[in-house]
Amino acid sequence: MSPCMMGLARIGRTRRTVPASPLLQSRRLAASDRDHGDLLDLCRRRNFLLGEEMTPPSVLGGGHSLGPLGAQLKRNFVQEWWDAMVLHREQVLPIESLCHLPVTSNPSPRAAMMTLPKSCLGQNQDPTREELGKMADLRQDLLYGALHNYLSCLDLLNRKLPFGIAEVGRCFHPITDKDICRVGEKTAASLAWFSSAKTCTQWRDYWLRQRLLWWRKFAQVPSRFTSDDQHDEEGRKKAVIQYEFPWGKETIEHLSSMDDSALTQIHHGPVANLHGRDGRKSIIPHVVWVSGDVERGLLAYLSDALQVTENPTSRGRDQRRMVLKIHPSLAPIKVAVDLGKGPAADLRLVCQGLCTELRGRGISVWPGYLETLQTPMEQLFTKYDETGVLFTALVSDTTLQSGLLQLRSRDTTIKETMHISKLSDFLTHYMTAALKL
Image (cartoon, rainbow, N blue to C red; front, top):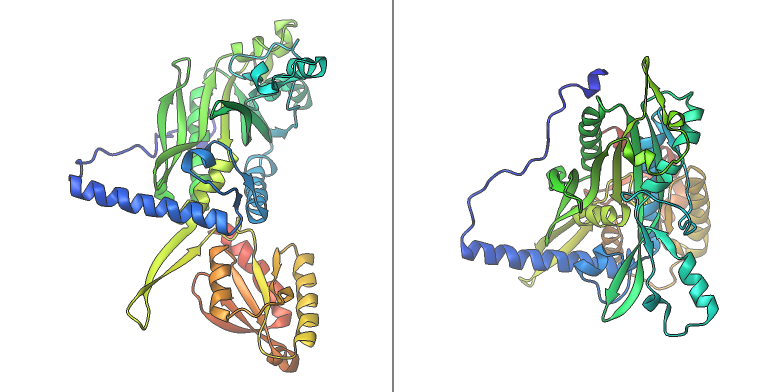
């Protein structure tokens, strides 16, 4: 047994606390309402999520589309997940399975498919809608695809255990809202890990620890990500990773253990075909299944990154400053390029060249210099802080004369002077260092 699998203890257990007084509870509820109101309002105003009426149930249930910033945040999130689970591991193979399967397939009970009820297809009973209803077997999770592709992946690895199958894809679930039945969508990130029955529990603990460390790696407040034990619909124990939202804990990922029946229910050929080599033994493996909700994960990181401070003004009023301190690897925009004082036409040419260079290095850029309306600099910084932009580069007439620009940091608000030729190297090194923290 490998050293990394030995001595793994349960982590993230909840401590028993003394109940708070009614006054303290009421204050906490008021603060919680304000905090989740700030979060959802920011997601709507800055177009992380699209839609007017945003509530915790509607957001958690997949009732909103992602806006431009939300889509880029999701792309970065999935890339980090993929790098950690597939790219840097020799025993994990990627797949991409179908979203719907023929009705003749026989999926495992653990890999449920959702058949749309006829009420979802409307009152028109023409043949095309009936045919559509027969074909609307939509996956609710990614487990079936991993189990279905087990044999082909086993052959690729010369039938050697243990190994994993990873996939990121869309899943579907029914939503009934005001007597209207519709299909809700989510993106799942799934790993099915195949190992012997003897080591299945150790591998489950190993993956739980790895996943909790991964979630905490990108967090401002890592302690908000915790693990716990729950029971599924069939009464079997499963581990969950939860995040402490302002309105309470929500599950963002779960880990389940299954015996060899998970494979035998899917494959109906000779049982010997399912055997893999674990050392000198030939066995049908057990399965550890890790499945995370990507959209819930994004909302967790947005909640974790949002920081609100009260700054007193000269008139004695408190001005609230909201900053989205998203981890550099996840931040949708790394740098905004904007104009300072100077000839606009010449400065825009410099900004355009700078943006082209940064994009060539794989750095996401917001072209603020294209904005035609004059915006006070403080309002501009407020906008960029609320969208999580790491740095703001200000190109001015000084840049035309000496090549120097001002670079403002989101996290410190400090402005530094830097030569324009060094900006791309600085940002590249900054991103590399952020991954090692």
